Length: 331
Image (cartoon, helix red, strand yellow):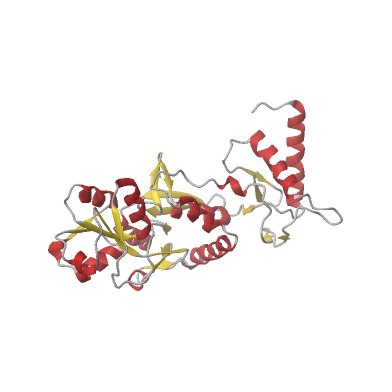
């Protein structure tokens, strides 16, 4: 975009207004600069669409973007690491990774090794095959059933099938390839990735009764890291209440692992939904107005931010202006 002299003046003036508003207790999204340089190492197994997968060398999916939203809320920088699923719990437990995010079902066995966040979504186990599987009896009669090692599907087949019937694999991608090649007859896995693989590969999902309850997904932390667990729980609560998590889930609905990461610029220019504490203990009210002045209309706020965002920064990227309070206004 080529800026005219008048546009530059307007944009610079707009930035000045926003910085002053922030110092006075303004209302755009703030980040706590005390943590802005802190990197969180996130362990994930990106072969689980639409929760985690690779899109043009970027980590994409529901889990990845919820993590980005949480880190944005808390002022952390996420660093994603590609890790085999069955190594994530051990890696987080040992402190090698700060967080595990990979469609991890909350269960008592894992709670012995790691802390869980509050649940952020639910899932269930289904069967993926070339043709419909009528019921659990038909599943148990198959010669070979594939699962990803360490998953709920793995636990199910271990308890219900003979070892000779089970093919444990490191990734779902390998399991799907074996299914297509006739090396396994079916795969037991979570509903979300099953639907994605079915759409992409022309396979069939059978939602049969496996005697399992619905599953809650949570993020995991080292047992001693109760502080980070609490921070994540607070952020999950806020992002659930303001609709961000549902927007991310809806964005990936019906995709088959071919959708780029969620565009968080949709939040640009929106007033914060709640008061935000500054690092000096003051509270920034959810309003742009100062005492005795009228608050701008919503469309005026959006236009103001659009001028700054499109003129000064690369489109659809988060950038920051630091105020004297060491807080940051996201534009």
